[in-house]
Image 1 (spheres, rainbow, N blue to C red):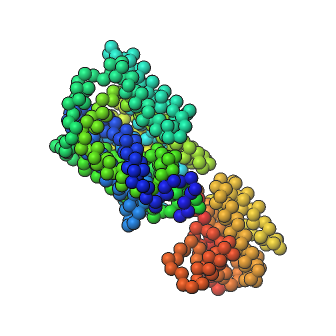
Image 2: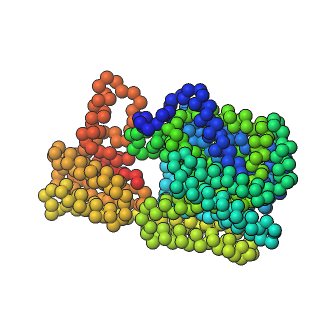
Image 3: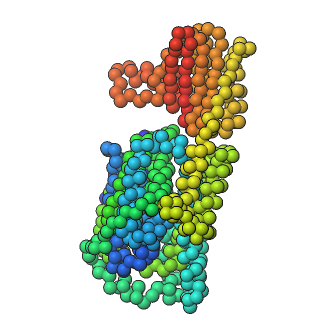
Length: 568
């Protein structure tokens, strides 16, 4: 790993203690902003003020534990990066649904289940590419944003408060909060731009106090909150409900996908020579994220997930040291025993919370669309995304229709996210039938097949919408293999090239008659090298120019085949 020049403190470097404490406080405060999501869920469950206050304190304990787990760099758990979690908008829709149907016990039990889902998916990461291509992954992110946005826009517009005397003030404060967040996001610079949501909440809170949206009882509760107290989880109970499985299954899957993106970003900003994702680190990050989510459920809060915005803050400040995570965790643990700090978040009125949810959901919807369009949208993906999105929206527009279905159907139609994602996954599996495309190139009339390979492969690659970087590697490698066969005189006659693509892996098979070409162990990394072995090992790879993700070579009699696999 090569340290980028723009980093002040790289991932392995320990900052001086004063700076380490300052950076820890900065991250702890920014992470605390997302405690407001706990308030949303507890209010949906009509929980008492005391229960919510204790949950906020325990939430900071859960954040501290998960932050440390993520920063561990040895062993199977942890990515080894500064990738702190926050209480995630991914879990808001399912958590509110659980709070309305089964109360807080259902929220806690199903949050544990979602964490277990993420843990179960970690070792399957490489195999999940078929089940979650860009169209499906992007759709999941987008529909999570839509579900969050529907809840947030209702709070922002004050749908339930339209008859109240403070309705006008509600709208003014809500749109002032949202406008502040958007303004700092668009026109802000540096760290100010990265903490735009926190600044918007501060402005919204001030506006709420001035306009009288903060009730006297809420202010008195804040003043009465003790300065120091040990959290009491007296409200803890667990109620696993089968009908909530689809919603939390999809939430856990979405959290896994988000973690993959965040940890990959961490790898890129900490390594100037980054080429491709390192799976071990990502799998460790997913395990840490899932365990942290389970810890949250056990302590009586909602699900957590790694935060892209905090990774952005660490990049902007030039401090990506994993040791900041340990400082941050210690400070969060201290905050957990200061109820007056947690009570600040109970003062936030509905329009401020609604504006924050709309702001966050906008990024999730746009990000999902960006992921969907990162690959060519063919007719299959058109139906997968379009039909699934319409079914998800229909759940919100025609709720009575879906409630009339049999109880078994309710398992999959409990929320926009569950029915939308379930439809997308099933349609994707259906349309995978016949998705693999293959073509054989013969060179019987050519004296120099190498000269034609570039044109033929690239033309077919454009037809199949193969990514340009994958195509470049495939063409260069195939030409090198054919050149080696020709130079060594191993072929009798002319070869044939079989090109196969399944939307994930591009496979090039070079078939010929003659002796099997011996190539280095592509993609294999040796742990130890003896004497000159490291020189010969590296030079062989460089000189042959063979850089597929996987390679197979086999022969039967005079028939030989070299199979090169390139992952997109």
